[in-house]
Amino acid sequence: MRRTVFDDDHEAFRATVRDLLAREVAPVFPEWEKAGAAPRDFYRLLGKLGILGMQVPEEYGGGGQRSFKFNVVVNEELARAQLGLGPIRVHTDIVLPYLLRYADDEQRRRWLPGVASGGLMTAIAMTEPGTGSDLAGIATTAVRDGDHYVLNGAKTFITGAVNADLVLVVARTSPAREDDRRAGLSILVVETASEGFTVGRNLEKIGLKAQDTAELAFADVRVPVENLLGEEGRAFDHLRHNLAQERLSIAVNAQASAAGAVELTVDYVRERDVFGKPLSAFQNTKFTLAECATEVEAGQALLDRALEEHDAGGLSAADAAKVKLFCTEMQSRVVDKCLQLHGGYGYVLEYPIARLYGDARVTRIYGGTSEVMKSIIAKSIGL
Image (cartoon, rainbow, N blue to C red; front, side, top):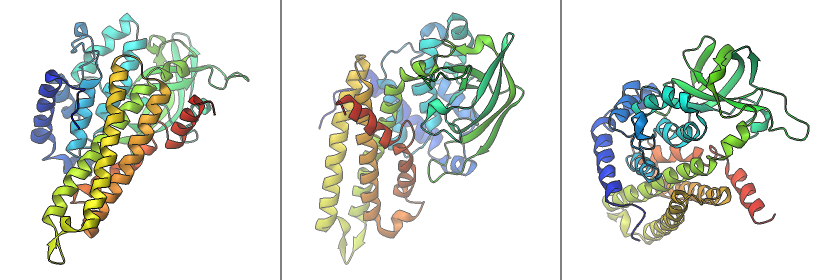
């Protein structure tokens, strides 16, 4: 079906992004996978081309765009090229909205020009070894000491931590109340060069090999009070405001990945001969890919409607949960079926479908698990 969510400006931007990825990233991406992260200079290049700062106000060196659709174009093109580079999405889709919403004028002047240029890469640290989805159980503490907070604790599964210059750390600045475990949490913007701040091991994962995902440790890290983002003790409320976009961003990637899996599998079955004829000639192949194509089309319709709602400011948390749940679960089904059609070659990493399979598994976990999405949806219908 014809998509109507993008205009000529979006498509011109898409061509620029696609050319950049084909020229600068695809040829060296296997090296980045072996290294476990993209080189720092790559993000400066993205900043120079304006890709990182599309939504940063023009006065701070950005593009001044309010629409999320330019971010969507970047995510779709990364998925189309089978390039798992989540730190880009974390920087532009997740961290930047918090800075735009809650940073004061001085903080904006201090951080936004670097965020747009790639001179300051960002990450966000919420998850801890013992908390998982239970953010109210955060144990990292930030104790006020004069004009500083003293930060102690640890975080894990932090995307983009290896290259980050600033990390939004969610920490407990006061004890939780008996009637509200979420109270007392605050967001501190921590410079990674701070004494006592340690980036631990880059975790080895099933997929997303070039997407650095690290552990962080804080040992008496002194964070200036002026690096408090938003109000003290209001982190949970602050974090909720961007959850819809975060989950929508994950859905965009999942949807594009599923579409890419179908496209490359159609090409594969046409070229692969089995029992003296093309694999595409078998009814099972046709039926399987017909099912996959239909699921992808359904996901695209749901996602595009959500994109329009989001740009209009009306996408609810429950609707974002529905989109993430459907698109990530659909991605898993489609990629698995496409790998099956590759036979044994689908299990070999030199075939793109194997990379898509490994990359797909985490989308049902991060940004809120599928079970969390179902809980949100159930609550929205009165259950």
